[in-house]
Length: 383
Image 1 (cartoon, one colour):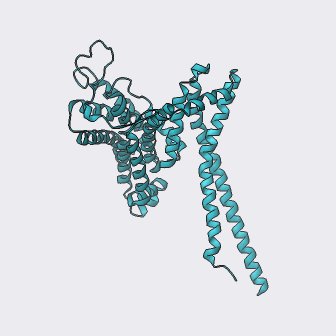
Image 2 (spheres, one colour):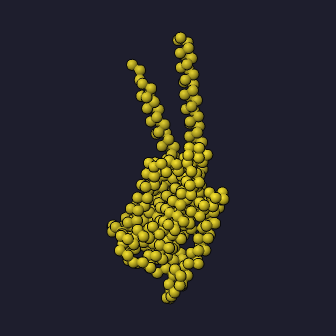
Image 3 (cartoon, one colour):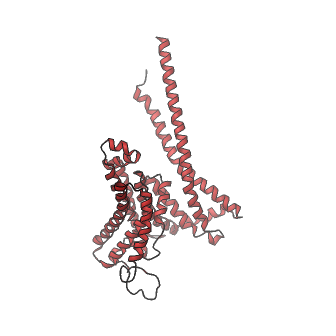
């Protein structure tokens, strides 16, 4: 009794899917392992015990207060990663998330201090304001790309510098900051109204930010848009080949502009967890570097919502546990080195895995062609 062609194909398809999943996991896992080995070698070279350093980090990381801090920080990191990943899926490099979220947080803080509406109106208002500001600022780079052909890498980097200058112009006494800052030398906006405060969950380890729910919803919507909508299909198709997408009827320029605006709108949310749940004002030292960190998180997470979640948790865990290293006699900077090494290793590991996957595909094609030739020769002999 012979099996049908469909039945014969199923085991091969399953093997292919399993191998593809393993290859997808291999790159980030290899990157993390390489970074651990390199950092361990650096600690050993400096006369420190790397195993004790890692033990200090993991011991503190298992405590309830550290877990809450990790989740709170990962919420912000996740939003940064998703904002950058949305552009990456379109093959757009939105390097300007840094300036986008700073401007968005500044305007949200100013409006939150000036307006005091019921919470169910006030909080959505601030979310919309932040997303509008971030989207408009990123849209400038999109317009330059589709009208003048300016690379989004160059324009977004320049817009980061301009955003810093705009913040400096607006965050002055009498404009976005109060005229009198009292005895403090720092310049900051007025505190946002109490109705602007986002809810938090009281746990054994402290207050867990309720903004984690917003981050989870962003991830779910991101995945559904990419995999279940026509826009998501056009987005991925344009990212892979603009010429092929144009031939199939996709308006490439509109997709580029829309993708930049959406990426900027998501970047506008990056600063809101800290603004609405921790600091309650925007100051000169408001959470720098999150936009650039989002690039590393998106790369490690392979631009997928689930992968970015694990990547954000890893980076947040490293940041939270790093504060314990100086108390044990270790330099806190080793964690920064580890994060930087992870980014470098991600690039190397992805290339190694890509080449291995390509080689495996070539071997499979060769084996299938050889099998077909042998079957054809056998059939001729029997005839």
